[in-house]
Image (spheres, rainbow, N blue to C red):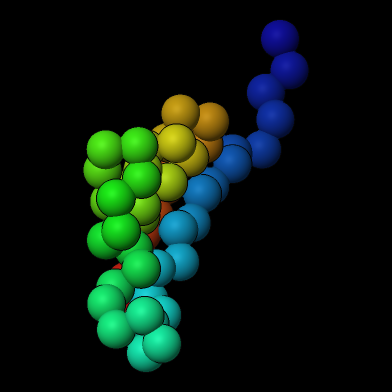
Length: 54
């Protein structure tokens, strides 16, 4: 069995959202906040996942 390099996921959710007036990462997507959905999605395929927020 060949073991490859580890894959890490990063969700960048630190934008100012000045035009929208609210945090885009909190907009519902498939029943949960967008940034949480992406975090869980990456968690299924990555060895480790990080969430960067402001």
